[in-house]
Length: 218
Ligand code: C5P
Image (cartoon, rainbow, N blue to C red; front, side, top):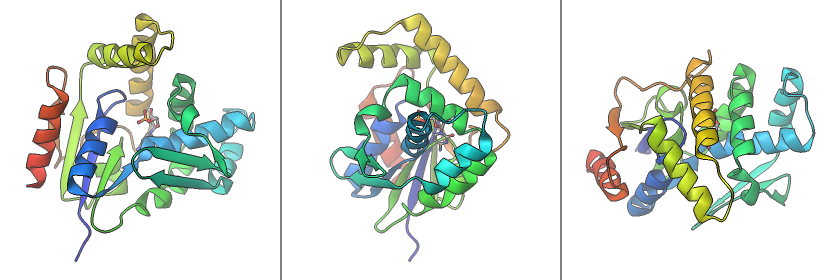
């Protein structure tokens, strides 16, 4: 029997992570946070002080880095044996991730690492190209978005709640810049799969988004 896959793609800050984790938990399925793979590569590249213009060196890091994912209650990621979970959420990590993610060879190298997450009894995969490139065969696909202003507001609130300093105008600019890079890149740009359900969560509660996604599976 084939393993069911639900893909949830969309721009950064649309709530994909929270929704995907909740849906995976309710279904008892595995969860792939594909952004964390690009973020891990960004951390490795920053640690090794690789020039962001040196494509061959970045590809080399992608090929040689050893990643371990522990996806129990909380995601724990180890890079070459070191726990990097705390660095994954940093804005600098996300911004660098979107720069290295533009490179076609990097995406090629990371493709199999993502496909390996497809394990029984099922998989919820969250990212930009889950339904279009990594799991085009998935029978259930969602494109989850929200306005840039709403996504910036949510991110700002998250940072303030965590006790970090934050500047709403700067976050809005960064979100728009990241959207532009993710949508305009040549390889696997952020785009809605033809067979995906479109959900704009700008005016929806988290619970109603989760319900709508679960309805798709039922
Ligand atoms: O989703 P998240 O914000 O963690 O992703 C960080 C960056 O990694 C994104 O801005 C995007 O450039 C890249 N990414 C990607 N393809 C994915 C997931 C993330 O290009 N499937």
